[in-house]
Every structure is written in structure tokens, then in C-alpha cells.
Length: 189
Image 1 (cartoon, one colour):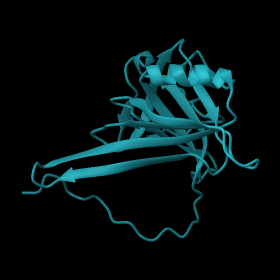
Image 2: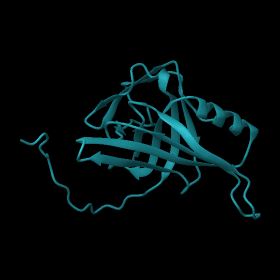
Image 3: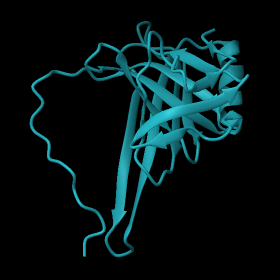
């Protein structure tokens, strides 16, 4: 007897899609109450009360979001490892302080992608929605040659029982959904 029945197939998509990440949003894991509600691989409710999301603009073509899928036939297990590899240009004391804080806390990460829905809105995915994400690697680099990048490379990873969900489509701006309560707003600088 099968545990799960497949529900549909998939043809070749005739539309072109764009890769890459526009923005990374961080929310402190403990400030979500309760954790975001995921229904059918979509985040349909976010409750943060008076807390805020912190938006980081990343250089075009520099930041990636991926998810490794690991299964064990012998053990009958399957899990997902979401990872964010983020680049920030320019070394600054302000960034040093924020990066230190990011490294000291567990976060939920939202990534606003360059890929778009049929209505032209950007796709947003949630990472670490159940167990959180931690910054577990990174570097601060000065570069060697005059044209080299000077800045930070940060890696966040997590461990989840389910694949990362998409955030429900927004009305006019990301996270403006009626079911979302983020009264602290989105902090951009």
C-alpha cells in the first residue's frame, strides 16, 4: 500500500523565468507567535505583533537561496536543508555590528526572488519557518586588486521536515496580506 498518491504531472513550462534574489528579509525566530501558518506549501498567516522584518537589499546576481533534499531509503526518512548564501558589499562598522547580532540569534528568512507570478508580483519564499535558520559561516573580505569586491559573504542554514513554502501573494507590496500582522513594519535601513 502506498503512503502517498501523486496528484498531477508536470509539462515543460513555455515561459522563461529569472533566477536570483532581490531582497532578503530577516525576522527573529522567537518573535513569531505562533510560527507562520503553512497550508499546502504556502505561508498563509504571519503573526509578529509589534515586531519588524529587516530587509537587506543584495547586489544583483550575488545571493542564492537553495534547498538540499536528503533521503534515506534504509531509514525511511526525508529532510530538507535550506541555505542562504548572501553577499553584502563594503566593509563597515555598522554592518559588523548587525552581522554579529545576526550570528547570535535564530532567524526566519524570507527571500524575494526575481522570479514572478503570473500577475507580475515577485515570488517570496520562507526558509527556516519551522525550526529557524542560523548563520553558520561567512567571511569579511577586503579584496586584493583594486577592482575586487570588498564586503561580506554570509551563509545561513537550517533543517526542516518540509520543503520551503512560498509566501501567499501580496496585494500591492510584499507582506501586505490581510492575514499578516507585522505592525513593526519592514525596516530597510
